Image (tube, rainbow, N blue to C red; front, side, top):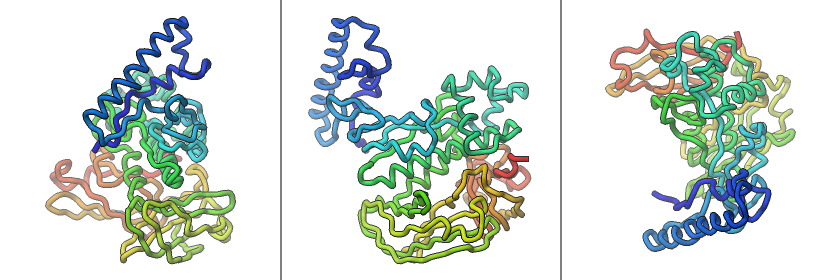
Length: 415
């Protein structure tokens, strides 16, 4: 379904009408008579011809003259409180990921962060001597002149920089996935003020490092797995607010939901430190905070780097669980080697892989013949004692994939 027709992408923002110093420097290249002629053409096309034609041909679908825009006669900025916005403070202006909570418009129609494709994809356009993010080949397969080093700069803030090239590519995908899901979480928590969130971008037209969530070879990146969960119609979104954690429940359902919110804090080895269950009623199309808990309460006697928080909504005997929530950045987690086990079963459609561990395995990525983005799920956290089941279709592996399976997790990149 088409939500709306949009006249253009970023032309209003680039030209910067209504304010002399706004825009991208385009209009400053022209004389006043030239500016008037250009703006008259713009006004005729986007404010007259197109809306009239849309009204004539598809009267039930709204028309929006330009994206981003705060409305007719008002330029969109990070601070405007109407219309839509393209927020690039994160990435272009080096804002931290936390600023996704700060700059929220009514409709967040563009924002993004880059990552590299998985190693198997990168090998298709590199030789071993090219395996450096600043090599000429890696620099040319990059959608942004600042991209490769910008990824590294953000990575230093949240992760330990891996020494190996394949590990660096892998962590770049985790960085992208964590950043963009932080944005989606902020936008959804702020419902109904913010009622739209579209990350840039879905795919690539050639093998390249970019803002995409799937690569040129149609492999899912970590981001694509993450956003599939982040956009679920009913989600729990914990949010740290000074010295407490607010447990938001966001519903895009049109009916109310009743159930039990179950919050646990556990050590990375699986020991329960705190738990609480509370009856909840979630209104339709809502964002609410049915429970807030203090950080000291959740930590007990444990350091923050050894704790994960799991919030689960139980409704109609069905568990709807958030991803684990952490109180520190990934580089500050006190990870220890885990005993990871797996078993493989077969169905007519594919292979079932069951994974278990005695300690947290952070962002486990499973590859088959080097490919990670072909499983039903990947880059996931394996919690101590909690089995995780993923599948691999026989369209990829028509014989037992066991000999060609490999496993990597965050702790492996720190050696």
